[in-house]
Image (cartoon, rainbow, N blue to C red; front, side, top):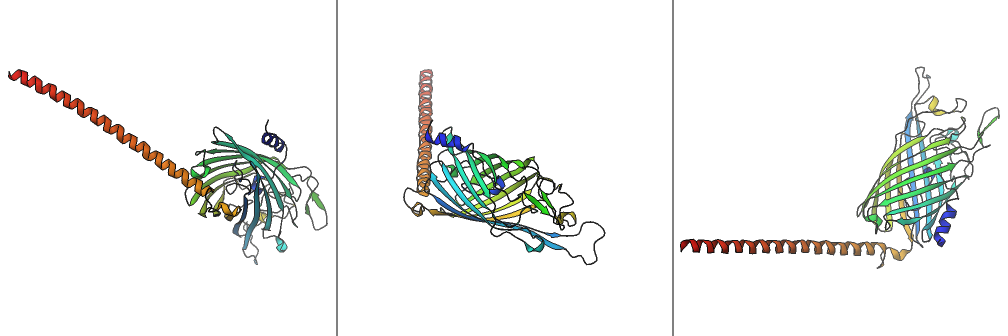
Length: 378
């Protein structure tokens, strides 16, 4: 067994962060690919997502002094990803800002730290299939937790693991043709005993067990010279649901169409839209203050806009130097064009040979016919 295979088996036993919390390494907006950064490569990414809705009153007996409220959910993240060895990279992410329009204007800035380790780019079938695993840890550093609209968190050290699998139509240069990606993982919120809510009398409601869930994701990517067109289906399914005094204790599923604009080899921009396809059920206890109980608001956002920018910081010489990724791609395209032209030339030559044989056959038949006519004339 090789050194890389041994490390990979060890990483299978190490937990990873939830899919909904990871954006590092090579990925679409939510679905991870089974590929890692090249050794020595350093990427920086920053993304922002937001949801907004007018919260109107539910029911017939609207208070006389009631006015609709504009509710929002805003989140931003900053990431650094480094390829520290072949098949391995690591991501450090900080949730820079998290605001759910909470009562009293509370928000987290900064919020939590995420550390992701990814072992991937292991190839099958001449590198047409890739597989790997991502391992991570969520370190709580925010002020408030157990909030509405966002996936559940109680402010504990959360962990899990995510298996990765990718299919690339072009086994040599993966970003020259379409690809399919599949994620499946297990996640532990590690929240047993965490205080979920404290009422006005000072009584603390604590989680009575660890909430665990399964995460999944399927992604399709179609790259062009300037754009990547992406489509993702992703979500979660609780194995052990959070306590009834928790927000966001229901399963969810989203479809995300997105586009990635690549004006430079070392720079790209993301624009995507999350569309919820799961139901809007709410099973949170009525004892927990919940704006969705009196206002016309979704339990999970029905939509979310995603914006992002990505930079390759190292190696700088990779951007334009001969032998870089863009240079390799241009050379492959050049030789493929030569091969197509050669094949087209061969096809033309074959057609000319066929026409020549048909002409020779026709001349032979004409000669035989001429001889027959001469014999009949005698």
